[in-house]
Length: 404
Image 1 (cartoon, rainbow, N blue to C red):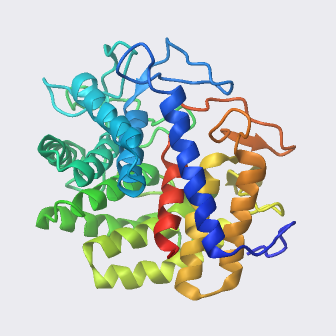
Image 2: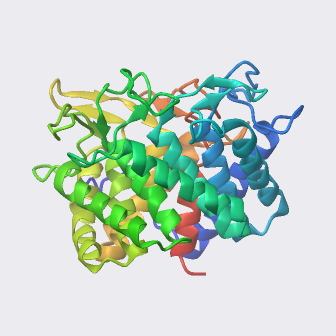
């Protein structure tokens, strides 16, 4: 781990917690002010770097589900009625516009008026909807929310689970039949099984379990933890392996530093949620080498580079916002596990980097990211993938972990 971060300085945890709380409020206010559709009751599908909405952009299930989760989780902490109102809006949008009442599950995207844009059933999207609905139920005790979340869990298991070879298939057509193009996004490999989807299925299942402690659901989480232990964590270098075929043959050597650091803390949290002592011990042990693998992507300024391709020795010299958010939690988690102050220092150095280079102090929210020369990546401020999820979750996680 690189301990020679420029401009490193210690920070008191109480002051850090106050800054996190302020930033959480800023992030959420941005989404209230700029992403809630001012002419209707939904959300804009895309808002550019200058805060201008694109009224023609499709509205993604992932974005609305992440809004639902973020504002539900935040409202329980802030007590702000505006945060509850945004959660209510997101839940209503999912019910009215995304729900496939013929075949079950949720559409991948709709247009601003709520008409179907892409009806496919991407498991990543179904999982995030479970994640958001479970959090909304925790906040509101809304019976329909928990019923829908359970229905989605059962659909994922019915259609998405590979009973012969284990794991979850990426995507299906609207009627849950097989499809050729399974990719989550254009940058992804077209493979049947991916680490990314499995990570967010287990995250969603654990959040559902925390409000609905079902025996079968617990067993499914245990199975997923076993898959990460056996297949996804490379025991030679402790990076996450990202793409697989049905037979669990690795199809890519690409290293994603953001996913490494996210998995380092999240898998342990899932094990803790279900109270499985064997996996708590295993992922407590694995958290440190996986964190150190992620730390290979640290730059001297405290930022985390995006990806590395070992086959061509190519570093993607971009610093996207979401890996920086995950770095906050991952390094703090490593400090909690070990007591090693270098991990806490890296957490606060990540915070300094975010505040200096990633936060848009003029127009709000966080930039998509920056290039190697510190120029801003002029991509969505809000949209299909840029959501109040990684950053608000980092704020909420650390606020909860730092005692007042």
